[in-house]
Image (cartoon, rainbow, N blue to C red; front, side, top):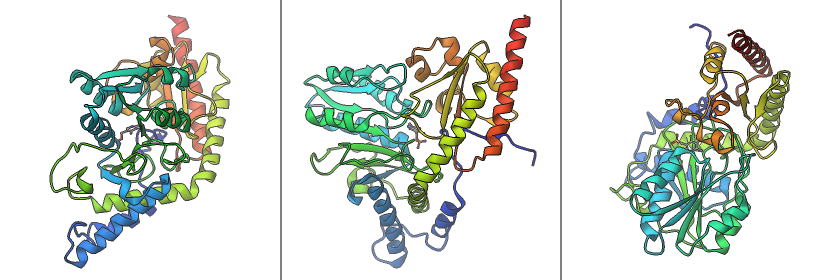
Length: 388
Ligand SMILES: *Cc1c(COP(=O)(O)O)cnc(C)c1O
């Protein structure tokens, strides 16, 4: 196999950790039962494995196992949360509040609801990517039924103030949903302390398999009602029908268990790598650091580069590193990132940006190679521009 570029796109997805894979494997073959089969041992052992992951996830966010609804990922969890609440509460009100920098898996369900007659308030963010809590407080109306604000941003890594948002929502008795796809296993999450009513999770950003996620749905104080978006055998207490993917669920549990056990040391290591990369890049002028400097994911570095063309920059980096500009989900389009334009960047600057997503398997040597090549690429592109 030819030498492949250094993988630095851990906000798009992560490799499955070998320990996770090992835990999953028996559930494809000898322990292949359907967790809903209640009359034999094949079903029981699958059900026991599912129960274990439910317990791991619940403990990870301070919920109860009954509050975990498995989905195929965070996109589905977001859809279930937003459309499920809209359908269950529309008689109470038809207004939803969200934020300009949300993932398309939140923005698009909201736009869909708008097409059905719901009203959506999209809050701006400040220059550092954080929402303004007074703006949030002002956005409430008597008809507001849901606030959806992500925990950690997938492009700029910014961590929103969940506990403060939860307090504001709970004071007004409005449900609070958070998309925690980038946050689970990486930062402390506590649905009680943060007064979160619904939380979307996914496994593949935290070294688990693709195709499995979950929605936390609060059962007490208040008990959240949710209209199912997929009907069938009544699995997951009727909220999400469909046979559970036992191997993926086992992998999800193992991935979160490992991430929690290693969270403190790993965050320390990733922060050091990120700062090493940033310090190296700072040798150049005209480099902007995107997002809040402290309230951010340890492994995220997002920069905008003056004086270069965005497409040429990515092309120049490509042979050495796998990075992206904007999010993977929208990188098929050539429009600049909606997250970076929300920070107030010009289209040109937003377009010339790079997201480094540093993860568990990256080393200091790799970061040094990446820094060296990125600097050389930017210098050479700038020289070309001035020659023309
Ligand atoms: C990756 C991601 C999603 C989508 O999750 P899937 O499990 O791939 O559907 C949603 N929200 C955020 C913030 C993400 O980073």
